[in-house]
Image (tube, rainbow over all chains, first blue to last red; front, side):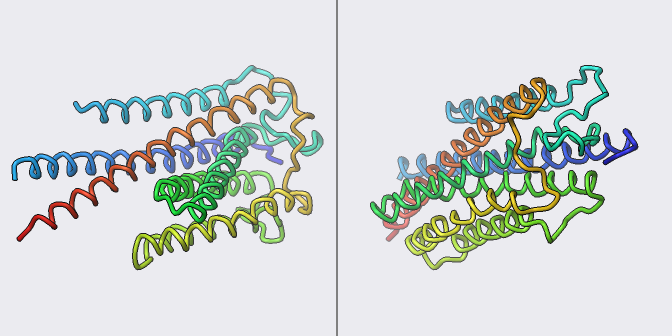
Length: 51
Length: 238
């Protein structure tokens, strides 16, 4: 039970911030890893064609 | 920009839009403050005010984790039977996504517990303890993969953990019936307005989880191609 509506709102804000941080953090890492892998693959394939 | 980049960005955008949609719907205030929005326990224990809305994210995240770990189970069994690397990729990617959503469940549950019970964590509550053990099992799954000697060993060991670990899943569900304070599933007793948002979340969050799973599998395939390309280059070296 919560008597103070402002405190309840803070709990909700904290939970939302945590969810968005976790998901955005994971998605950001995933995007960086995808981009790096794609760039490295393109480079290796072009090197391979040249040689 | 490469075609693959466009597809990746499009998938990320869809996932972000879906989750933003859920956030907006869950935060929508209809002006009726007489009831606790989002709380689906017995009506007499309502009174969570806005903190009750955490439920719209907490339960769908648990469903998403369940979905992801089920994919891990099915693909682990398929891998042990066929030894096809693609099953291992799907199993490990799903375990990673499941762990992500399990983390969301634990964090949001803990904040909700602080608001409802006055404590961040209650060790006597079987649902909480089994959920934490489940989280550690799948964290172990990823650790085994990271520290295995080679890819074959990683795939074999993690497949066994993916199958054995899933035994905990029904335990987590059943544990909810033995706890004293964790709300029990009573979805058909929900207010129609609460049910609408709840089922919107139940459709949206697993959809986001599936999009992320797809992206994670794409990353795995790229890494496989990269490894094959590197091997090819090394073979050519004199």
